Length: 464
Image 1 (cartoon, rainbow, N blue to C red):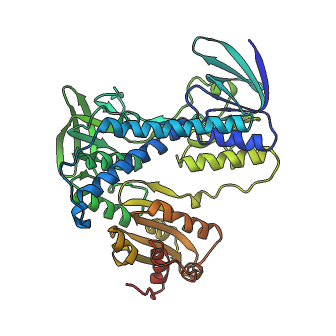
Image 2 (tube, rainbow, N blue to C red):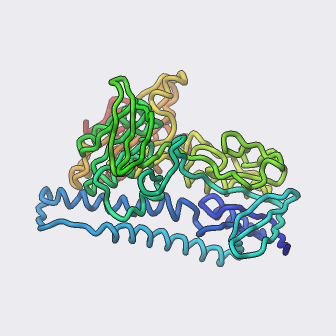
Image 3 (cartoon, rainbow, N blue to C red):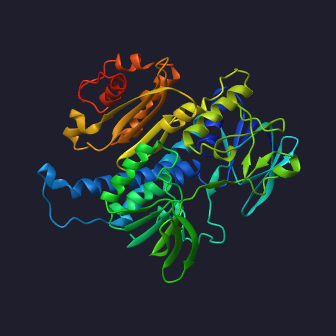
């Protein structure tokens, strides 16, 4: 078995793995990435990037439906769904090619295949129609990510019971779809297919859609979805799924039991780690519920073995994986990086209106014992929001009453996922409410709502 030696070998070429590899190469290390599929992982190929391309199509479609409000008229609005999907796939391919370019630029070797740990810094790489090879590295980083979790006893069949992967490449728009799970993935696809005429029923066992978000924001989004014609069933449990000519989802709630019928059921109930057949158990790498256990610098309990990104557990976000990769490499290089502040991670959902947040929700701040001040500024009071026709939603900021520290930020609105970065910087720097509303925000902008929400928390917002 041929053998190659490296300073760092990364198993997995997603946003955690490829970023870690580039950072290591920048620091002068000899690096290889073992990836059996296209570089970029789920994020670039089947997740973050192509879904946002699809969602942009949905946004445009909804703009057309309201064109008369803008004084614009047209006849016979139609769409070519195959071209919509093709555009999304092209965007994904371009991004994957971009990572290939970065690998060449940084002299990183991409080794196609599946990596299995053998111990002693060795990895066996197997690929279809090729003899097995062996890679040896001083440091091994596992970045194999996660995949969609199926309902027990109801496997994905790719046609009637699907995951987000199949949802991105359906050959046509279904007439009806049952979305099981109202987290970010379920919400985004519900918005997307509803925009193209699919009758959507969402089923969520928790009291609200986007259960991890601030309850006020979740309820406002739920109201928006209902106005758009999406049926939302919260506090509803899936009892069974039967597949025939259509899909029957049996559910129960406080109102009783009933059967829901749809052309397709999209299951979006969470993810599980890709840990199988990697040689983790023989090495004694600690794994709990498919997640590799690590410390603040992504070190496992086995020296020289690390895990980053989704495989290391929540939060399952691409930007978290990338930062973990950088911190891991900096620690390996002896640069003494600061641990990641997981209380200041932005979470984003890209439906319309968008949802973005970081820090504590109002409920969690109170539960933690804080006395708080809460500031809200609705986009209906924003001149820029009125000008662009995007008045739905609000900015909600939560401050510690004693010190004015920003504890949490929650935005529902057109550009929420862009606006949240300002609040991430503010929280990183320990900025108080005074610092936020003391910073002049350009007019007219949506981001003025951040300044006004901070002012509102202290009773002196100007425009409400």
